[in-house]
Image 1 (cartoon, rainbow, N blue to C red):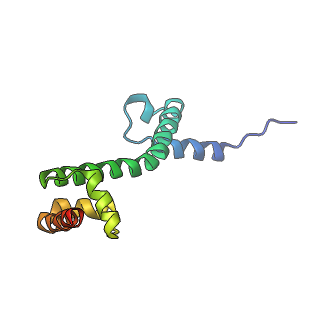
Image 2: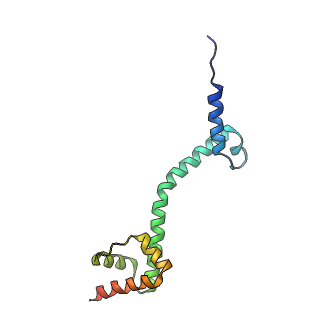
Image 3: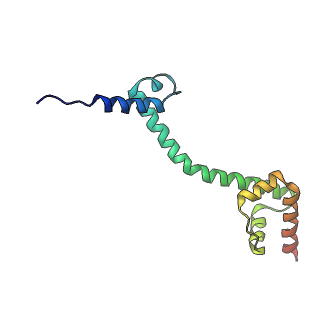
Length: 119
């Protein structure tokens, strides 16, 4: 029985990997063997970092809110606790946007929270 091969499928598979490896350095962009490894690693990082991005952005928002709060004389945890107590349900993303782009509005929010804490 003659040996069977499937050249079109093999060529398509290699072409697909080399297309993904375009722009990589050296052999990783030209030779299938190295490109396959580089693409595999890149896809693993992409998969992991799509999930990691969410926690990194949350950290960034918290840092921004904390910095804005400390300038106004209250720390992050007390501010968030007071917000929850008052029933103000704003997420961290919108709070950080407020702190960065509209400091007066954020300051008013902090004053409202402080007044409720004292009274």
